[in-house]
Amino acid sequence: MTGADLPALNAALNATSAVLIVLGFLAIRRKQVLMHQRCMIAAVIVSGLFLASYLYYHFAVRGVTYFAYSGWVRLLYFFVLDSHILLAIVVIPLVLTTAWLGWRNRLASHVRLARWTLPIWLYVSLTGVLVYWMLYHLYPPT
Image 1 (cartoon, rainbow, N blue to C red):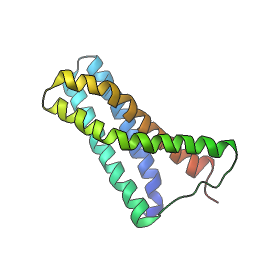
Image 2: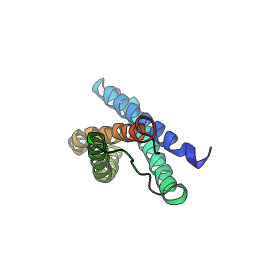
Image 3: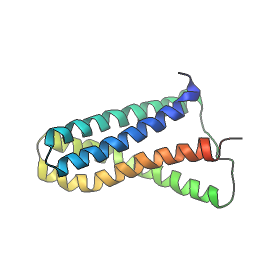
């Protein structure tokens, strides 16, 4: 694997995280607590791997990747990117706190916070894939 492969790996990690989040949600709705725990722990690990890979790519391999297109698609791209970045910053402490509350069996607080954490985390995971798709496939760098 080369540095050029890391954006695709990062998108795959984001997609995997999204799938695990949805599976974890469905499991808890079906009262499958152990499956929920396993899915959510796996989602935290996969998201952590994504973050490490993303930071390595942008600080040690590539730096900034510029979006070269203009017009409405540029506005759409930056709306998705900016909301993704802002919510990615917000979701890190939310995920860690929600996981900690669940781990400590403080379920009322866990559930209350998870109602916010889950949709934000899912949005961040899915928009990470969308940003990759827009930047590298739909409108690739020139």
